[in-house]
Amino acid sequence: MNNKTQGALILVVIIASILAVTVYLTDEPAQQQSVGTITGEPLPSAGTTILIKSVKAFQDPNNSSQVSALAIIVQPSGIGPTNFTCGQMTISLTTPTASYTNVYAASDFVNASTFNNAYGGSFTNYQTVASNCSIIELQGNGTQILEQGEQFAVFINLNSIHLDCPLQPNAPFAVELIPSTPVKVTFTDNIPANITPVMLLSGS
Image 1 (cartoon, rainbow, N blue to C red):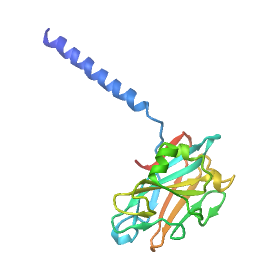
Image 2: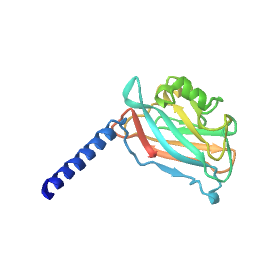
Image 3: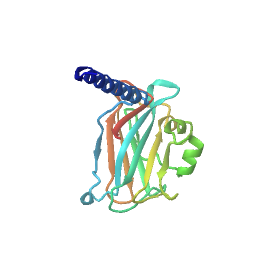
Image 4: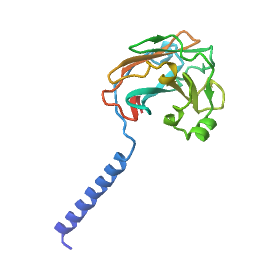
């Protein structure tokens, strides 16, 4: 086999490898990146103990043209724990139709074992739960205190809050996480124009 033939075979193998990887990646659930804004950055000087790792929006299973749920993944900023017990944490929501000073008015904490076993670790499956706002433990020790090395999800069910609450394409919204410490963290964004089953608005 001459050098030219060997070079052609190597090129074919490389192209085949790239195509195989491309097919694998596009088989993943479609997500659409948006550009959200986080204020109250989780730096020691800011005084907040919460770091927003990512934000996801979920298509309404009964109306594909709107968003019916939001999941805000949080972890400690590194300067101390955060108490997510109802009464110690306030979560506000602003939409084009209304402002809700606290959607986390009833204690609804779901530990990691329940979330994985009952809902398959899926936020999409959890949309069936009629709760305005749930704190879902993704990694932790079973308590509502967010500590180093742990992750919680603030899951907001817009359908459960009000019939007019689901968000339409391009709709602006804001969520505030207000712990008992003085500094709150705010996430603001617009819903993407093209709504898909799972949309990544910020982070990874």
